[in-house]
Image (tube, rainbow, N blue to C red; front, side, top):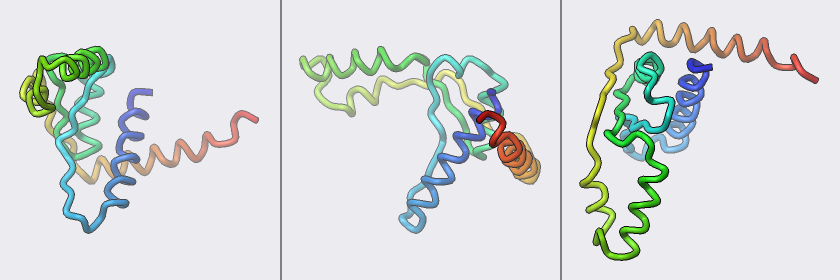
Length: 122
């Protein structure tokens, strides 16, 4: 399940890259948040399969933080989204370590497993 999360993120990123090809858009590093980011193995695997760093902020549960920032912007605590961005701090970073050829081999095997599972439930 955890590996599938990383592979699905790879599929989304691949689709976005394809849709924006030729526009000079650079993707990465990946900023991550939420409960799953406490899983060190998953975060390393995510960096590996994307071939880019994964970075967790000091405040990993950003839903409530985002609501607080929105409220603060509305009442003038912060004057702009730039002020909010200035509060972001890195807590942990994972750099890709897996050989890219190994990543591609595993990605192909994952796709094969997904194809084999189609139609199990009808």
